[in-house]
Picture (tube, rainbow, N blue to C red):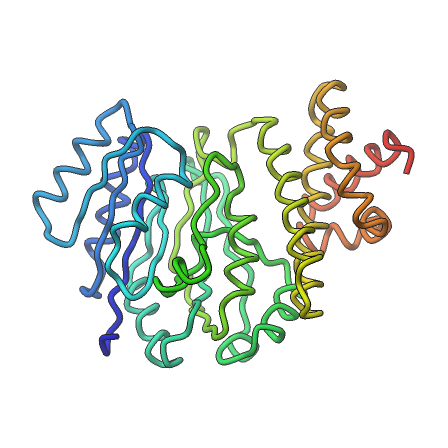
Length: 330
């Protein structure tokens, strides 16, 4: 591995012509040069493919993959088949990197002797600037050089959001542990990140936020879709399977923690849908409850929801959750 690591930045891009120039420029304008930018045109029907090709023609650090539309997971997988960097980072096509993002990441990688996984922070804003937010503060002393058990215990003690874009991961980890993304799955990062965290053996944290997340009407997080709820519950079941297969007690507890958190989130979100959909979500929840009879009891206090989701969102989720428990007669 080089003294200064090469970082592969993957950008899945589907019909993001409105934002893609700003996204790409935020990478190309970095004060750190040892990177490649892999743009994945995920079967776009607007001018996204042409924008991708334009940058590839202008800058040798830019590579383009054109493929049929398969969703964000397949776009990321397509890039992972061709990346050449020592580390891999993900940037969505409607988001941007903050200045000095890559230099801060590289410095931390070298300082911590090339860890398997680096955790970073983000900021979020709406397109009309009506809302801005910063990520949770991270304690370097509880991440840098710590064991997997120490890290997992720390993450469970803070309101940590498990979005995939906050991680920079050694490229060899993807092949070694089959850390590719589940095709067609909404909230694929909720399935991917617990596995990545548990497989890694060394960690570091980048404290200055490096990722800027744009909240807009067409973004994934603001698009209402009942499939997202069903996918969350599918992930809960898979995490429970990992939990049952795991022998390490801390990892076992972490998979359970993430499964419980997702179940609480999915069930509360279901309350906003018609009765038939609520019933469908409840039926999906039955095997989750059967595998963990303490699930609902562990999340029956308001402070649990506030700790996980923050306030006032935690209060709203808790209120819906109480209604769903009544519906399930639990």
